[in-house]
Amino acid sequence: MLEAAGHSVTALDMSASGVNTKTMEEVLTFDQYNEPLIEFMAGLAENEKVVLVGHSLGGLNLAFAMEKFPEKISLAIFVTAFLPDTEHQPSYMLEKFIENTPAVAEGWQSVVSSTAGYETFMRSTAFNLTPPEDLTLQTLLKRSGSLFLESLSKANKFTKERFGSVVRDYVVCTQDLLVIPSLQRFMIEHNDVKEVLEIPADHMAILSKPQELCQCILEFARKHA
Image (cartoon, rainbow, N blue to C red):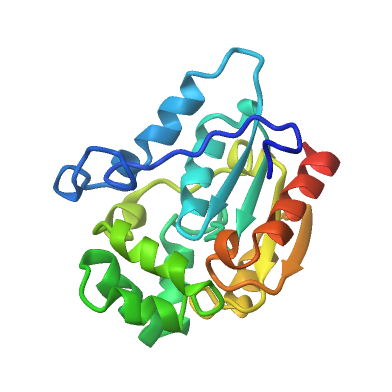
């Protein structure tokens, strides 16, 4: 839909994710996990700028790119994503997630690190409004992952001068049972967010409300990029 609207779109798989050939045993830190995005940003032409869109844990991928390449990013869009601040370590919002919804967080960490119980947990949280065939496909493509809490807790804080200089917008998914709306709004309140739009999507907005999500991205890009 974004391409049909005239945009050039690149969808990246992070290390040990999707079709990326690395395994989790080779990816010990968040920096290693984020290498595909950092390499993509480094390869942009000198005067080229992009709109970055991050979902869920992908908000932290965006944040590290914003810190490293603020001059190459015209806009960062966070879709029910972890949005860090400049006052705490990069792990802080993940820690708030664990603190505020311990049972959900424990379940997510469990299914991230293994495939056992994945479909049952995801149907009741992240995919609660998503068509069942999409969840089935996701289950077939599932790979083990990590939240990288240890490496994020040791990483440098993001800076106002670099990370903080990039315009950011946020899409709140009001039916998200994983990263719940109150946590989404908490992260927004602790950041200088340009604009917020809400859609009645579950955590997997790209599957449960693709048209509404696309319209949000197009509107943000038109107004702020």
